[in-house]
Image 1 (cartoon, protein in one colour):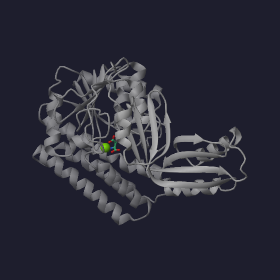
Image 2 (tube, rainbow, N blue to C red; image 1 turned 90 degrees about the vertical axis):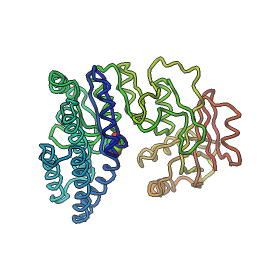
Image 3 (tube, rainbow, N blue to C red; image 1 turned 180 degrees about the vertical axis):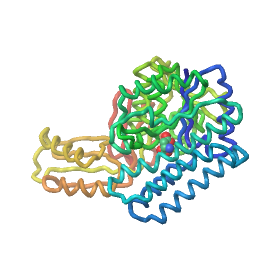
Image 4 (cartoon, rainbow, N blue to C red; image 1 turned 120 degrees about the vertical axis):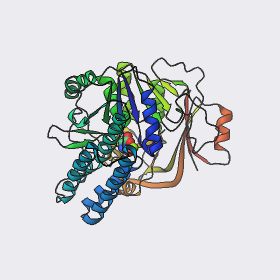
Length: 421
Ligand code: ASP
Ligand code: MG
């Protein structure tokens, strides 16, 4: 059994959806659990629906939802070449449910309504793709993942109940493979024990696929992307990036920790726990080698890995009475950061001051400064970048920081981090 995940970019055009079909067809000897996310930018559009609904801008919400519906109906009609198909009945049911939600008064939390509305994207995309594949001879079964993925009610970032979900995978998913070798399910969503829809966090479909891979004891997971594989830096920012053919789970976790937007960070653990390799491949050209992420990857030829986090702020916190910043003060400071849900990207302390680099979120920073104000003097520097290089070489560091001011720097054997202006 293999688990595949196709993201929004792979469903952006009719031609791409057809290409996904060809890829799946080329694995005809395998059992495949295929996880699919919403088409193109649908999730962003549905977020706007949720926001407007919650702000009681009902008409705007209804109009935005209507646009999403029309877009999906068009794609479905183009793929199937007709409107006379059961698929359209199924789509209509999803639309009706969403319209009901929009008819309610928003009495519960925003996060709750967000999850009831935004998960629609995945239901629509999977229903369309599944019906289209069945018409073209790629026999598959459509699965409503909300009948399988049980979570808590931490809306917008729900946590999987692994025990219940394992039981439901055994009872409801495995038997499907007796009727077809392909099962198509939604990424990103699940459900509570009260049958409320939940989402697992933006870009969560990679993680959904990893949950399936873990619980089905899959031989591998493949994430199909519009890029060649994992690169040593973001090609939109850096010239001359190289593809990484092999890399370990640990290294990918480090990359994600430092801010690389490669794979959803929650994805690795379920795979690592069961030693299931993760392939990243390009759906535009499946012959490209891509990347394999596994425990015992041969990393001898790993290139330097560069991660750049933009829009950073360096905050310096100084004691008002020139007292030393000792453990008790540091623990007070951390408590405040924790209470304001601010993640610290890098810290450094000196005798009477403590500096840290954080993402620039003006509202949060204002609250932070208010909270720290009593005991400390605060100064801060905006418009910075946090540059992290793993497996660095000195020549490369010079090149990357040429003409720039380094405000703070930390080095270990393997990693250098710099806050630069
Ligand atoms: N459709 C969701 C999102 O765009 C989940 C995903 O793509 O993984 O965030
Ligand atoms: Mg997406």
